[in-house]
Length: 120
Image (cartoon, rainbow, N blue to C red):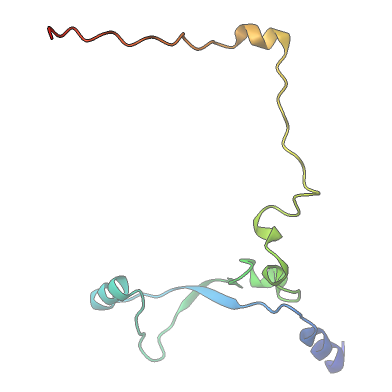
C-alpha cells in the first residue's frame, strides 16, 4: 500500500468516530470524595492510567472493529435498535392448538366484595 492510498482512505470518512477510552484510575480517599461529589477530578502529572476499552462514543463499537469505517451513529441509529426493522426477522406468534386449550388453567371467576358487617 502506498502512502497516497492510506491517506486517501483515511480522509474519505463522511461520519468520523468520536473515540473514548474507558479507564481505571487508582485514587486516594480525598480524591474519591471529590470525584463522588463533583463528578470529576484532577489527576497527578504523569499518572499511569489503565485503559480498559477503546470505543466510539456515538455508535458504542470497539476501535478494532470499526476504525476504518464510517460511524453508524452519524448515519442513523439502526445499529442500536437491532437493525433495519423492515428486513429483520419478525416475532413468532403462538397459535393455540385444540389440545392446548384443555390443559391451560383458567382464571377463577371474579368475586363480589362482601358487605361490611358494621352495625350502622
